[in-house]
Image (cartoon, rainbow, N blue to C red; front, side, top):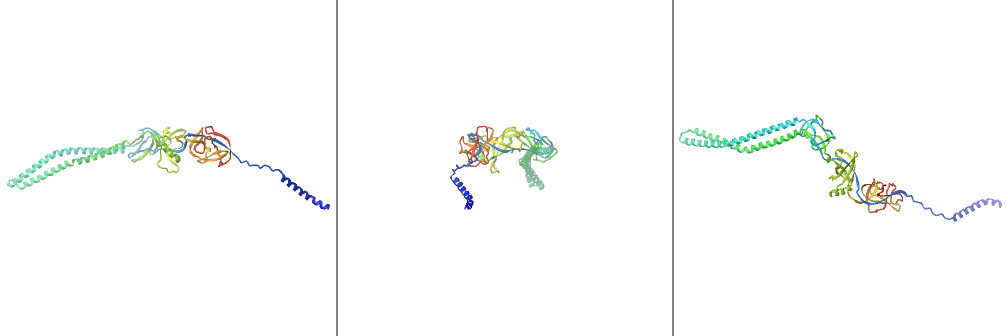
Length: 419
């Protein structure tokens, strides 16, 4: 019996220990549940202010002009001298290019000789007309005398006092005299038309002479107005024909900034132009400040999201502006609208910011008006009806920003403070 108890005691102890453990576990007090704490992202907040501010818009454009002056040869000739180079500034009337005047001089002399010949023909025609008028009276008298002689011979022939031959001779003399009278009358009658032909030819030659004299004077090509030489296409010794472009000039006052304007601003800009409200653009070119003013829009556009605007120069040394230069400029819209300034880091995409309410983010869609610097800090002006003065918006860039994200404001600013 003892031997059996020896083997039963260990399993009984183990079973007893297990029962005691289960009893203790079942009767122990329950620990309070541990709540899982949600992570909060540290952010900077901006206390917004609704103000009336004028936005600025960043534009990219090109210095250009549609009014280049082409210096052309009026007649053929050889280039004697070229006095300017590309980039030179010239005054009105300054000599640019000299063409050998030999060809133009020969053409002018030829037309001058033709005019002198026609003038001599006109003088001769007038003298001939006066002579024809004087002889016309005499020829009429001679015809009358010839008629009387013929009549006398006929009467004498009837009494056999003259021969038939004398009558025939008188008839022939009358016909000859009548022919001469007819020719004189025709000459007098045709005088106005012949004189008109001579005067027409004279006018034609005088016009050609004026052109020839102008071409001769144009062998010295001068600047039509003060400007800057853009390009010279010829060199000394070159042979040019009539109408050849030899140089191009630009008048500084006609230089423009051609910039593309986003379509969302075009309607507003057109309305301001219609009201004669100036729209200005400022740009830095090689460290020099220039100011332009919107003058007009292009008649058409080949872009779906922008339109080309032409801005005329209003301030700055135009002679130093390089044509074809691409620049960045800022356009100020002279409109004061209720708007909210936010830093660039607060705008997500093109139309979304995040309001901070009860330590959570709420996405708000805004209307982007343009750029604006606040206390030297770049930012944007936006419009929305979902915010009021004093509301907080996310001011820093947060890649995890989504609707409902928990955040903790560690920095707080105001729109007018130095961020």
